[in-house]
Amino acid sequence: MNFVRQYYRSLLDFCLRLRNYVRRRIFHVGAFTKNSEDSDSSSTFYGRAVEGIISSNRKFRRFRRIYDYREILEHVSLKQAHKYIERVNQLDSSVLKFYKNFMNNDFVGMPYRYSFPNIGFSSPTTIRYIAVLVELRKIFGENFGGHIVEIGVGYGGQYLVMEEKQTIQSYSMYDLSSVQNLTEKYLKQKTTIDKIVMRNFQDNIHIDFDLAISNYAFSELPKSIQLEYVEKVLTKAKRGYMIMNSGRTNYTGRSTGKLSLDELKVLLPPFEIMEEIPKSSPDNYVIAWGHN
Image 1 (cartoon, rainbow, N blue to C red):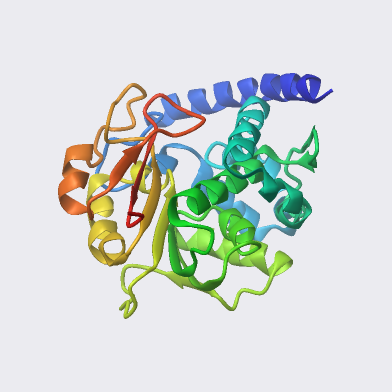
Image 2: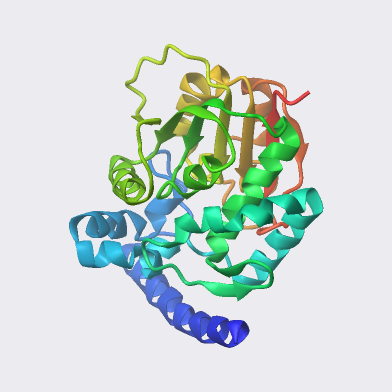
């Protein structure tokens, strides 16, 4: 039944992708930005979708099904979700025993959910957030926490999963102001937000972050903005974990206009290059520092 639902959803998504392809041709934009001002999400219709979700309670109630939003978030496939579960089981299968605690992430926004053995119904995106948490625990130890900063927060799903298992003193979030507004609205439905700090480049930061994380977002920013994050955020982090989809290879075209891996080696603290497991795109990899 899962794969039947996935099949019909993929047919609908194909039609919506075709629609957005036509829209991009009309507006003369590519699949990925190549200028120095905008992130890759600006080549989608994500920003407009977020603004509509914030202003409409009807859209907010189902925002995790809106295609223009899912082009950037909520696009983990059923097949990928099963691979993430395999990865979690390889690293720490005990985490799945607490899965019902993580399901808190799926009760707002009407995400597409599927039935998984020994887990129950879940959105594939929540399973990926759990897989990231397990990777972090593997790399930095089970007791990592403290002052954490995330670049590109979506709707706060990674935070919501992490707070179930880690001791977090503060959690700084960098993103577009409209995305931050959506994140705050979403998290208020699920938890207290006293540990959340919405930040921008104008903030004077007087703490060293214990951990900086980014699930693809940093690598999708143009070089000029990446450099600001390096200076004002990443070099202030004792540890770092970033899933990257640009900088090393350029099979998809995403690396155009972004910092190269060689440039990152000069700018960031000494880091280890790891493979993304499971690999969700040919250009993807992981960099981590502060774990040795």
